[in-house]
Amino acid sequence: MPVTAKVKLQNLDNVIVQKFSDLPVLYNGMEQMIGIYLEIFKGMKNEREAKEWFTGKVASGRISQYFVARLKSSDDWHGLPLRDETLAYILWTEHGGFRPAAYVELEQVATKEEYQKNGIGSMLITKSFAYVKQSIEKRGAWLATLKVTTGEQNVRAQKMYRKILGVEIERRVPSPYHPGEWEVEMFARFTKP
Ligand SMILES: CC(C)(COP(=O)(O)OP(=O)(O)OC[C@H]1O[C@@H](n2cnc3c(N)ncnc32)[C@H](O)[C@@H]1OP(=O)(O)O)[C@@H](O)C(=O)NCCC(=O)NCCS
Image (tube, rainbow, N blue to C red; front, side, top):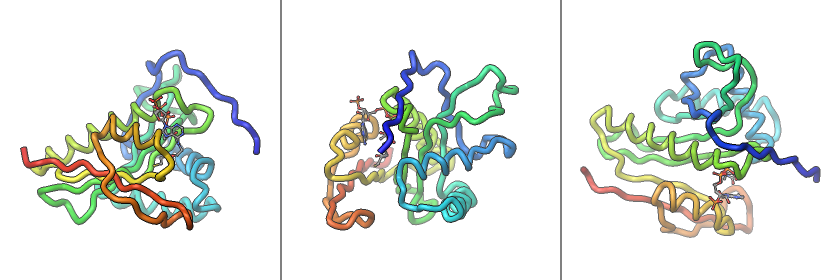
């Protein structure tokens, strides 16, 4: 397998987190997210199916929301990106309707391999989670349940989720994606403020 060269960023000053739906249509953000998906997850093997999946998710509006971390560039036009520079994406999904006691899942998060371990994933999770929580509160609801699932062996991801989101392991389940492997379901449950 080819080894991907790592990019070491001095700091994250030039990395910004944006809601995918706020990006201009001209910016090929979806293609970039699909590129990251195909590189990192490999569940869907072809671009056509991945595009159908991403398009469907985006079309769901507030039900499933993507956020991207991208490199700010000197040729940004009034804060809008003009070229390819998406480094990571995250997908949040709300379950069971827009309920007063909201149930939200961090469904997917990935950073381009060459940019991993620069703090981008942590920043993306932290900032997008704050946004998701705020938008729930704006509609007069509150975040009651937060879920994230990860591989049982992926203790580093578990540590990251525990630290940033305050979730704890509640269940161990057979992986629906990797036969013979196990996943852990992590939750944070909040009381009504
Ligand atoms: C998980 C992931 C998004 C983290 O992104 P990142 O940009 O490297 O994140 P950060 O640089 O902020 O690192 C955050 C922490 O994640 C840890 N980490 C989490 N999952 C990891 C994984 N699969 N491999 C290596 N490190 C991982 C890092 O060690 C780091 O811990 P630290 O703060 O104690 O050093 C990235 O490793 C990735 O895309 N992994 C593959 C896809 C994946 O596993 N997604 C999550 C599935 S539930």
